[in-house]
Amino acid sequence: MDDSDPDGFGAGAERSSGDTRVVLALNAVLSTIFALTITWGLDFVGSLEFTLVNAATLAILLFAVSYAVAS
Image (cartoon, rainbow, N blue to C red; front, side):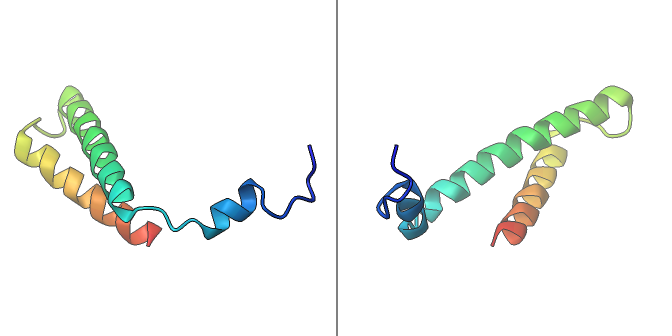
């Protein structure tokens, strides 16, 4: 393996802009799964009722915060 190759993985990753739709979709899916898990856990301990509105609200908040942090 030759580490002096300028056209290696690092150079390709630096030039790659990627597709923002993939990042947004992944953020939405992971935020939703995490929100469902947190809402279920809070319902399990009796702190919050597990409803679609509560889970969706938490998912939107998680999505917004992670988008703001990553941008």
